Length: 278
Image (tube, rainbow, N blue to C red; front, side):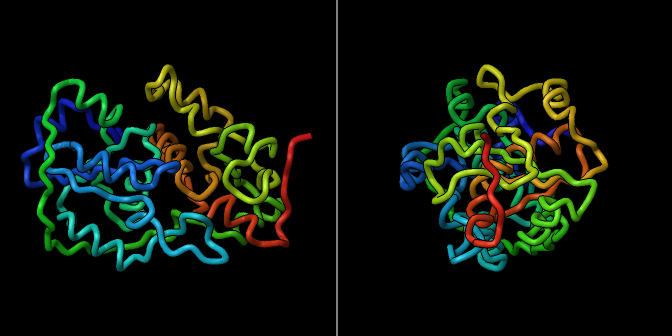
């Protein structure tokens, strides 16, 4: 079963009471941009969700730059969007699914599997002349009941065990671009490099000519991975890693887990080793 819906499908079902649409557009370089884009226009009926205020918790010494949000606060937000157990959630952005996949992952982590992503994003949808609006939807009073799936995440100590080869049959996947993985360029975090023992599979390579790869293309991309082994996915702060998780889930890979704090959490522990390319 695919994790995507087409623009045409969404337009046909947009007035259904069973569909909740969430606009996840955001810019890491301009944190106010997503809200401005949403106010300017959005898919009819869509609620807006902000990466920083809705999909991330409070930053502290450990946990990374985008720690997981408080479950109760996130559940209240989901309820205010009208999300309940019987609803189908459609997430969209305009950034290669970076932020839509964060919502997709969070909902599934909280036990809501009825979530899909709009294929090709908002601009593609709008260019087809499908329904958009400037009207803000009313806040809802639905009750979202979270049922956390703890096996979808790993913590730093579990990652360290794999890195030090104390835990076999597992692979650590770094989702960042090659320059950051190699430690040659680090524009965000205070230390460059990668988790020792990790392999580099940049999330951007799930796309070809600006389009999401076919399942055949994804199978070829991840052909070196064992389906039965545990796959720990990380990035800078647990955001773009969700795109790789989406790709792995799309081709039926099992035991795919997120390291939520990712590289920004790893380097917050002075005892952790740092890998760099020669």
